[in-house]
Amino acid sequence: MVLTLADELQAYGQTCHIICFKRFQELRSKQTIQTHIFPLQFLRWLPRSIRGRVVAPLLDRFIRLKTGTPDLVLSNLLPADRILSHSQLPNVQLVVHNTLSQELLATAKPAKQSELRSMLASIYARKSCIAVSRGVLEDLQQLVPQQKQALCIYNPVDLELIAEAAQEPNPIKLPEYFIHVGKFKQAKRHDRLLRAYALSSVQTPLVLVGQGELLATTQELAKELGISERVIFEGFHSNPYPLIAGAKGLLLSSDFEGLGLVILEALALKVSVISTDCPSGPNEILPAANLVAIDDLQGFADKLQALNQNPAAFQVALRPEFAPSYAAEQYLAQTTPANTPML
Picture 1 (tube, rainbow, N blue to C red):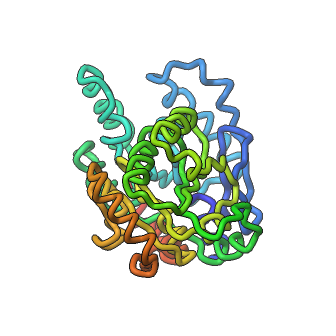
Picture 2 (tube, rainbow, N blue to C red):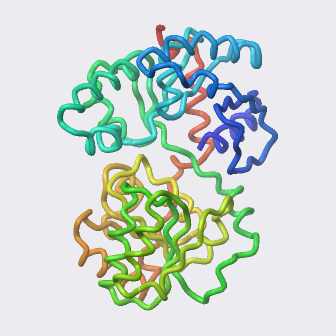
C-alpha cells in the first residue's frame, strides 16, 4: 500500500520519502523512491510506556534533516503510530490498517483489555486517523470514541504494476489450482481453509503462499486430514502475481482483515475470489454470493465446489475507488490547510 501510494503521488508531481525502522526490503516499486533508515534498534531498550515520547523528537529531527518539513506524514502500523502520535511535525496522520479490537483485544485476557484500550486511546486520539476500510473506521470510532478526525480511504491497488509483474514465469506448473496468499498466523485461519477444502472433496490442488509461525502446524494438519498430496506449501514470493494470475480462484479464510488487499489484487488479475465474511473489508469488495459466514465450514466447502465447477460465476469487477489515482487524490486533499489537524 505504501509503495503503491508513493508511486502514484510521485506521478502527481509530489516528492515522497519512505522512512523505515529496518534496512529490509521485500517488495519493489515502479519508481525510485527516496528511502531512509531511522535506527530505532538502538532505542528499543526504552520501555514502551515512554518510548513514543522520547523517540518522537529524535524522529522528527531525522525527518526534517532528510526531507525538510513535509506537507503530510503518514504513519503505518502500531510501532510507528506509538512514536508519531507524539510528533510535532505538521499534519501527521495515523493510517489504521486493521480492526484493532480484533487484532489486539479479542485474544487478550480480560484483565489486560482495559490497559490495551487505554493504550490505544492514548495513541489514536492524539492525531487524525485514516482507516483503510469502513469497517476499520467503525471499529476505531467504537474503540476510541475520542477520535473525531478519522476518515476512510481505501488501500489502492496498482493495476499496471500488477499486470506487468504477473507476466513473469509462474513457478506453479499445474493446469489448475486454487491459491491462498498470506502469513501463517492465527488470524488467517489456514486451519479453517484446510478443513473446508477437505470437506469439499475438490481434487483441484491448493497452493499456500507465505511463511509464518503456524507453518509447521498447518503442514501437520494437512497430513491429518489426508490432503497433503493436494496441498502445496510454496513459501514466500516477493512477486506472487504470476501465481495468483494462474489460479482458478483465490480463497480467503480469515477471522478478520483490515481490507483484504489480496482480494483486490486477485480481482485486478480477473481471478475469482471466495472469502469468509469477516470483519472487515471483504464485504466492502465482494458481493454476498462470494462470501461465507466465518464458522460455516460446510458453506465454505459448498462455495468451493461451486467455484471449482464454474469460476466465471464468481468473477467480480474492481471498482474505481480502489484505484491509485482515487486514493492519491484523497490523500492529497489532506495536505490542504483546512484539513491539517491541530497538534
